[in-house]
Image (tube, rainbow, N blue to C red; front, top):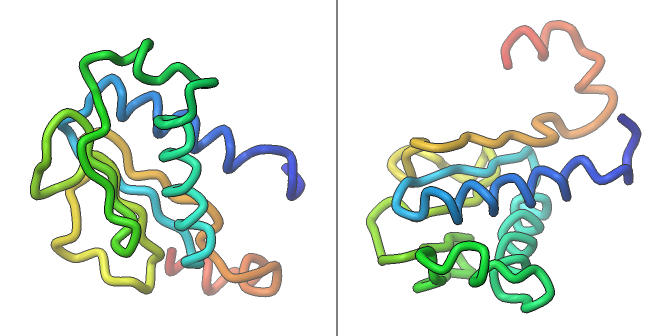
Length: 125
C-alpha cells in the first residue's frame, strides 16, 4: 500500500490491543529508523493514556505501571525485566533487550526505495 494510508497506525493499534490482552508477555516493535520506532512507542502510549480510547476500561487488568522514554519501553500490570513493549530500530542493538512471546512487529525494514528494489539486499533480510 502507498505511504500515508495508515499501515503503521493499524500496526500500533494491533500491538496495543495485544499488550492489553497479554500484559505480562513481552513484544517487540522494530523498524529501520529510530524515528519510526519512536512513533510506535508514542502511539502505543497515547492509546493507553488517552481517555478517548478507553484502554483502561477495555483492559482493566492491564494498568500502565512504567514507561521509559529513552529506551522506548512500556510495562503493563507489573514491572518486568522484559517489558510488555520494547521499540527498537534494527541498528540499536536488540540482543538481550527483550523477548518476543506475543509479537515481533517489523515495519519499514529498509531505508528507501533503492534498497527495497535491490534483490541481493532483500535476500539477506
